[in-house]
Amino acid sequence: MVAETLSSALDIFKTKAPSLVGIDISSTSVKLVELSDAGKAGFRLERYAIEPLPKDVVADGNISNMDQVAEALRRGWKRLGSRNRNIAMALPAAMVITKRIIVPAGQKEEELELTVEAEANQYIPFALDEVNLDFQILGPAATNADEVEVLIAASRKEKVEDRVAAAEAAGLKPRIMDVESYATQETFQLIGPSLPANGRDQNIALVDIGSHVSHFYVLRNNQFLFSRDQAFGGNQLTQDIQRAFNLSAEEAESAKKNQGLPENYDSDVLQPFMETLALEITRALQFFFTSTSYNQVDQIVLAGGCSLLPGLDELVSKRAGVGTMVANPFANMQASERIRPRQLAMDAPMLMIATGLAMRSFE
Ligand SMILES: Nc1ncnc2c1ncn2[C@@H]1O[C@H](COP(=O)(O)OP(=O)(O)OP(=O)(O)O)[C@@H](O)[C@H]1O
Ligand SMILES: [Mg+2]
Image (tube, rainbow, N blue to C red):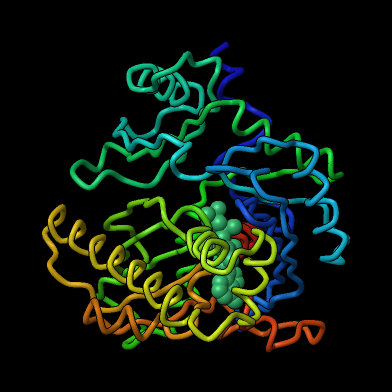
């Protein structure tokens, strides 16, 4: 059983891989990104697609309707127009338990597996045969040259299996199961050059405001200092619009994006919502300050669909007193001539996770 849990068909961490399409299965859509290696220029964006998901098919990262997700994956992949069926996916960080351990250097693979297994037994709250377990050697331990630091990741098997089953039902070949926050961190590297002083030695808050959840991270030189999930997002605004103007969810969702709402929308619905978002962000900053030794962030970067709300960056900047911009992972990247720059600018902030997953191909 030991060998079985460790040699799962899918590795949470895996390095050498064929070119992969990065796929983010989120609450409102399935997002696909394919990159190619552009040598010195870094990456080139070949293709991407955002395929909407029906409501409540994915909730809190759980797939509640397998067929609908498979169907969206099939449509999304078709729309992508790629021949590549090899994909990388991710689990929400909340579904993955990670732990860093220190072990003697030079252990054989099998020895290391046993050590990891024993360690995992101590802190994973469910039976190990219900768990996908994986590990990665991070490098020499800081304190002792005879030891190495190992990162262990564990998640419930069914969470991994649901995603794999949906992808396979869509004719795709899952190769990597990553963690969403790690994929975001990967993409964050692409944003550095757009930041003042390239973001070097600065605390950068990255806020991914999706539909149901917002992820708040603080990074310094591409490493996480802090992370926190909060249950708020654009779905709240959609509901506010429904209530204020007596619209269905679909109508409200479409009106929100196309800005076809009565005049009082801005003052009565949009501005109060944006104030709430700004307040949540300043609160998260306070949490960061009280739970670390830092008392400053140098820049805020907004991502996710809500970052497209016109004027949100300025409002957050004003309320938090920190320069704020909207993430564009493709700002310094070549893109295929198939891709329309205008549309890409509208979609880019929503593609952080899918892009980070596609980048795994080239590690
Ligand atoms: N142009 C736009 N203007 C305003 N809101 C938008 C725009 N485009 C998308 N949104 C909103 O952003 C949200 C979707 O963003 P995103 O794709 O980042 O969320 P998600 O990843 O599906 O959700 P979650 O991360 O909660 O699973 C929806 O609430 C949508 O209404
Ligand atoms: Mg999201």
